[in-house]
Image (cartoon, rainbow, N blue to C red):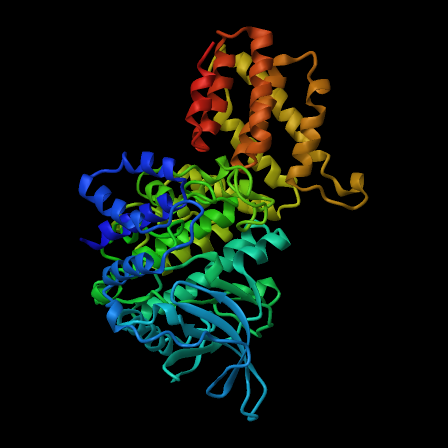
Length: 569
């Protein structure tokens, strides 16, 4: 049986093992091909009936099948050692508290016990119940790989050894929170989340430079070290009060060959069972070649989750099989079309939570995440460095590589960058005039159009004049303040001039849309449609152009259903 078949078989076993007997049999009857269903039925037969305890011989038989699938002989396993306990001594270290358990082992907080100095460390132990040649080899490989990594964003290997037949690794202890906990509890804005992910990506970039692919990137494998560091290369954590990301758990990492693909495939072909489907690349799930692109995919999933609060495929709490199917066959919603932080199910404290300014992800950041998560590895970013570069461009409000060829997009970004630092004045005039230039209606006689344009220009001139700091106690209104002032006074100001009212509304819609404030642009566009329909009728060109304006906004947000609804009577 191929690795991919075993992964599907074990995923189905996970799903069906938790079902009542009747539902289990019904689900089993739907599985294809028949030989896979038959093998699964034999494995499920080893489970106890509902309400019964598990008979040891049958479970032992299933354990042998699983061990064989992993390339490990059940007969080769040594007798189970006494489980590790607090107070146990391993070399110069004393186990203090169990921090967690994973697929390969346990992680303990330990204290230095030889009296040379006081210190803490994280000690990783290979699980006694899984100790075997295959897992022992992977554990030894993790020690070798960690010894090659010397990046400040990766938890350092301090020591390693074996005592009483028990292998252990001594790692740098990170006292802090996971990435999800850190951003959720602080309700960090989108830019701060992106900077944290860039720190993680730089650590991954270092691992790739050492020909190491992580293969299990996810928020729970990233800890936030709250210590303060004097400097951080290329920005990043220095802007976040000294909090530095630490990448953990290279337990299923692999070595890369010169082509950037995994070189030690035989040793790790079944370690994919220990990957996390929600963050795993499609090629990891199907058992195909894994490489740099697989880590880039996982970084894309993390970016999507940090920006939206949700996972790109499915909801939290889905079975492994359902998640894997979603990754391989499902469609990703745009970040700006997602809802709450839990994807509709699961505990409210799951995941990183939705950033307060999630709307800022529209456009460029969505494009970056989408490119990183392409199903075809060849279509993703060529390197983690390219992924980081686009995140840096987004932070600087510069065109990202996946959209840089669009001159209209570059112009909008130029307006947005300058609008963010402008006091108002000439920049507001430039932004509004640009919106006006692209939104003028091409109808009527030239003389009438000129008179209408003059009325709009006169209004904009008055609006700019209101930015005089003498009228605001020395305060210079910014762009949004002037726009809000205009929006509030429009109905009264142009109550007897519906033509100018409509044209100013259109300018406002275009300007808010260019600033990515779709939360304001959409209701204003709807107001423009109602205004035009009321004064000139549904079939009038001005009403149709108003609908076209709103359709363009929905198209930019990838909302085809709303576009279709606009065309309905």
